[in-house]
Length: 219
Image 1 (cartoon, rainbow, N blue to C red):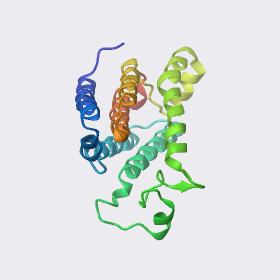
Image 2: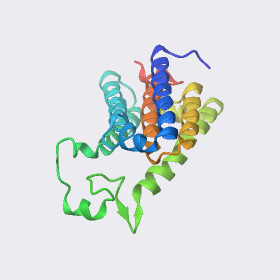
Image 3: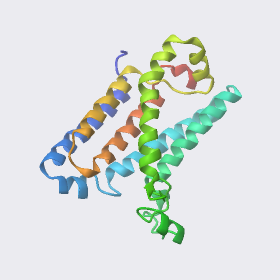
Image 4: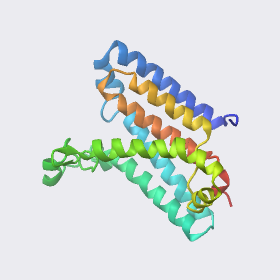
């Protein structure tokens, strides 16, 4: 495992501090944890949105500064849009910030009556649970654990991944995510997933800034 970059040390230290307080409050005062530490519109939620937006902004900046193949541009553009979408969804597209009232459609079909997709209810089931939890978990396992292994062993996979500008996590990124997962699962508080989403944002930003295949974002 390559020694940690300065930014990684800062990012991991930040998460360590956040989780240390989170574990303490989750085990001593769950009410405070849910209503204040990991509250709706709190630092964790806004922090996640900021991290996702930073990833998107970084990718768009790479698109403007680097001239590569069409496939690379398509891959990077799609990833930038995905993270921009994630940032918007996290804060309901600024609805609560700007005091915008939801339309009747969202009031009737959204679990929190907000203007976002991840809290939509379809046939009595929340989209968040089906798509943003179960499907995302599978994607994370493939991306953080399986892909780094086959990337190093199968040349055709390596070329395909690089062709679309997909960053490969380093070992420290995978370890950090596994540790964060274990810590979150051990918390008894109901809003513990807000910290998990924050960890997602921080770790993924570190992956994009310092991937194993870092040359894909260089001229």
